[in-house]
Image (tube, rainbow, N blue to C red):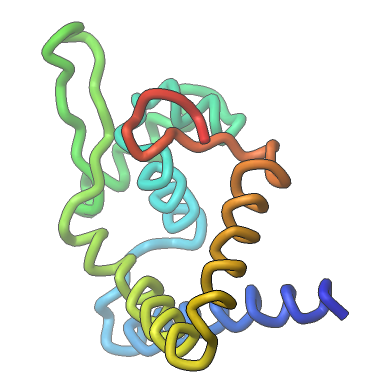
Amino acid sequence: MLKEAFFNVYMKFKLHFYQEIFQRLQSREASLTTMETFSMESIQALGRPTVAEFAAFMCISTPNAAYKVNSLVEKGYLRKVQSQRDRREYYLEVTQKYIDYYNISTVYMGQVMDRIVQRFTPQECAKLEEMLRIIDQELMPEVKLPSPSGKEPR
C-alpha cells in the first residue's frame, strides 16, 4: 500500500509537469527535448557543475556532455561562466529562461505543499518533513547532490 501511494504521488507530479509542457508545445513556447530537460534538471541540481562534473554524474563522455551543453547554451537555457581561479574551467549556470521553464513544476509543488499544510496538523507536517529528510539523506545513497552550501554531497 505504501509503495502504491508513493508511486501515485510521484506519478501525479510528473504527469502535471507533462500536461503543462504539452500545453506550451502547442503554442511553441517550449523548445527542450526530453534529453535536454533531463540534462538541465541535473545541471540545476548539481549547482554550477563543470562540464566534466556533469559528464561524470550522468555517466557519459565529456565530449558528449560538451555537445549537450553547447546546444543548451545556444537555446539560451544555460550559460558557461569562466572560473576566476582556473581560466580553462567553466561552470554551468541555468538562465532565467530555464528557471521560468522549470517553475512549471515548482509552482504546482508549492500548491500541493500549501494544501498539505492546510490539511495536516503541524505535528503531522513535521513528521512528514522528518521522513522526507531521512529518505533524502539516508535511503537514496545512489544519487549524490551537492549540499545547498556547495561544499559536500548531501
